[in-house]
Length: 402
Image (cartoon, rainbow, N blue to C red; front, side):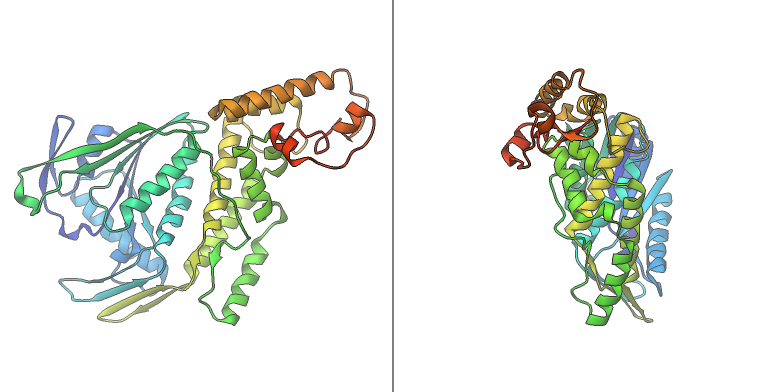
């Protein structure tokens, strides 16, 4: 799967030039056209900020207004078959023609967290075992290129624990004034396979959005809504335990704390809807003010990465859901497919599973009992944390078998 991604600022003032790349030359006001023709991506995604909007009485209209502007210029520039993602931005602008002011207030990190949420939905549509992401930062402005790059590196590092992933980054020759040169070269500034890096974050609470700037009654109202969305199977404790089981190499923990992907998806979607519903719009003839009253938190990112990881595991195992009671063979298959990103973890898990198989050979005449009781003939309830981690979670007092 090849994906071409480009963060865009305001395309209204971009000048035409002869873009040159890979022995090809195309006249356009955007580098995206020649990259499309050269790379032939299955998907082209333009990332733009809601700050491009000039009109709107609700946030859906703000996003629509910004999207229409991007798509109008993209088509004029010759860009074909693309998807536009509008993300929450900040900034203060004045249209040079209408003189209308636009003021967007909020947390810049909302762009980053929203982008992670949106990109996960796109990457999970991929059914291939390799992904190439091509990032063109030519037209990105302010915080957009760095936050886009940061989000991609984190997401792709997580995906590469299971799939082959490559990232290419492009930018054009700097020129001031822009028409100083007849031709503008596009440069490859990064072209590298992404190393596997499992997500290591954890959620501190169930709070996925920051409502600290609201008054007491508004806080209570939103908290009631958010609480009604929550399911006991997707609390911050279970989500953190699931993610921790991946990067610590605890296969039994993955099965034990594996989230219900449908409930998790619905929860994330509802939380994001609350975020967008709490955006205040004041649209006057000469001034548009957009103010986000709440902001997304790091926990929102953590829950999204849990959703990504759980879906990827199901995909690699060719399963639709995970059973809580699993066999030794299930654990072996998980180890072979998931933990190949870390040879050390894979070897430890393999050794523990082989030992477990030897210990339990011909012992199939019992109901659920602790492994310690089966092997030693007596109970011992204290769990040793060091042994738990050293033995890939197969601490004899922490495991029940039958």
